[in-house]
Structure formats: C-alpha cells, structure tokens
Length: 146
Image (cartoon, rainbow, N blue to C red; front, side, top):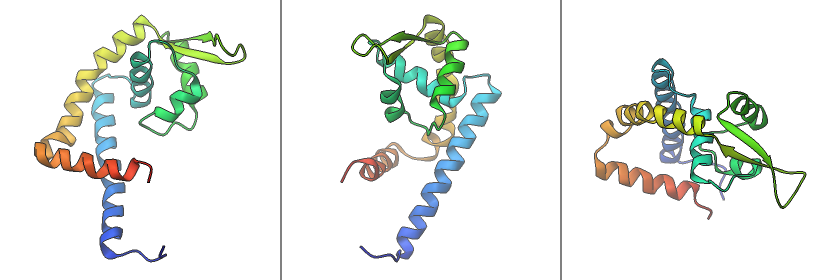
C-alpha cells in the first residue's frame, strides 16, 4: 500500500469530508431553528424505537449515525427529559437496557418532518434519484468491511 495519494483520491477525500460537514451542519441548523430534537437525540431515539426489546448502551454506540463521544451523558439527558428509560439487563444484572418512552416516541415523530425536509433540501433536491442511488452505493463500499 502506497503512502502517496493520487489527485483523484485527494479530491474525493476533501470533497467527502466537506460534503459531510456542509450537509450535516445545514440540516442541524435548519432543524434547530424549527425546534426539532438535536440530531444526536433524534439518532438515539430512532434506534431505540426500532429495537423495542431494548438496547444495551454499547450496542447503541455501535449503531449511531453520528459520532457520540459522550454517550453516557447524552443518555443521562434523555432519561432526565423523560424520553428514554433505563432498566436492569435481565441477563447481566450489572448491565442496563435502554428503552424509548411514549413521550420519546412522540417527540421523535414530531421532529421527523423537519429532518425529512432538511435532508431533502440539502441532499435529495440536489441530486437525481439515479445519482442518489449511485452515491449510496459508492458510500456503501466505503463503510462495508473489506
């Protein structure tokens, strides 16, 4: 493996990082202005809602869409807000399981239209459906284990 980058790889890397920053920042700002949940909160609630049997914190961390360096504090804030509840893990009494609450489901659902509009505005409306599918396929190649 070479330690030199081709011009194409350099250009792709820079554009990937800038595109991620640009789109995520724009979506976050638009949703914040609309009063939607913070993106990290939404991400946790979305995952918990899809796993009604509960989720161990380490499992949640592995699946989050956005980097969460302080997951335990985020969970504390979600529990304090009444959007998430903790329960003892039935197979490991030292561990815990996380569940979305009914208010958490309501807030997540109320935030979704804001996120959908913002993602469409900053991604979907800028690409054709074929381009979007191609982008998803290309990005998939970068995140799938080799």
